[in-house]
Image 1 (spheres, rainbow, N blue to C red):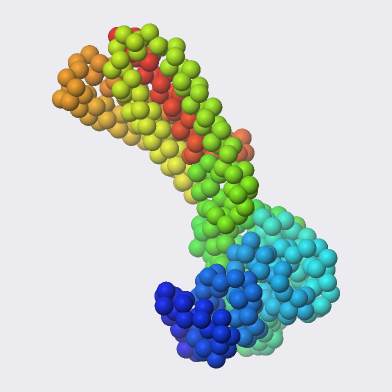
Image 2: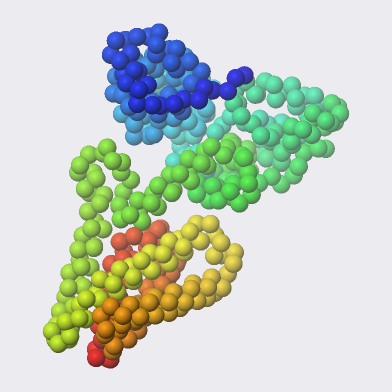
Length: 451
């Protein structure tokens, strides 16, 4: 089989393709997309309207059409499928694996979903109905029902014959799972071992016991961590009775990791819900406004706090020059510290290395950074402004701010994680606002004590 054509989405090609769409030039559209990977065609269709994209899909094979629909992001697909008739959607879903089919059906209105299920291939419909009862974010919700399994009492030749039959419905498989007469998972057997073993040997004599498996109720993020930690290409899923009910492959886990990273990126940026740039103005505003309001509240508190030291600022106006320096440094240090802690919590390296050891390293880094920055500020102030005593005060305050900001940046995500909140909350506007107030408090306290 030849590899897919490398697709170069240049400006000239997009313009020529648009012209072909306007002229309904079916020959050019078919020839230009021949042997092109479905993912590349998906990228191209994002450039056009839903009606234009549907016209292109109608010219392609049903198998390729289903791959493209499956490759769309959830929000786009939900909107796009509105212009499809129920029989068209049914034909597309019948080409998908059970987990992907369940995902598409979950995005449709209930009435349309039930009508499609009634028209689907009976075997696939049964598998999808079983999957729809699971929450989207547990192992049962991301598993596929298609897999290769063998009974422990079969001979190798029986097993290979059954694999041929089952493989017609499984696009990729990495191992054969071994079960007993009650479908309880016992282990797995490598394909290589099946091929090299005498045909009369029983499967029970050659399979590997105690396979790594996950329960249907396990959170998808935990499944991703297990597969990442043990470098698994697939993992079997069992119910509470230990029966084999499905499998999760690496492509399902990549989707989970991508979704989790996107969610944490938005949280760290101060966006309170999942939004896209092309969402409505109100939805984007609603997602961004809460943390901006918190930032405003922090700014007002900072202004009020500075008012308490109005007399000091009036007597020594140069004090005000260094407020942005103190706040910016404290905010940056806090974000750096919290981001590293969040990364450690996600990868579980903090748990592996020991909490006290990691905290000791964090504070050692803070002390060293604080000392270097304080010395730089002291010599910079002395050379540029010629201040003496004020330079010492600013440097001492900066040293304290760096260390306390590091403490807050480290402790906050740990506390959030301890009480069941997403630690990424500590890496955005929250930590910046907190450290602004903390930095001002330490700065003016130092000024008050020394000057």
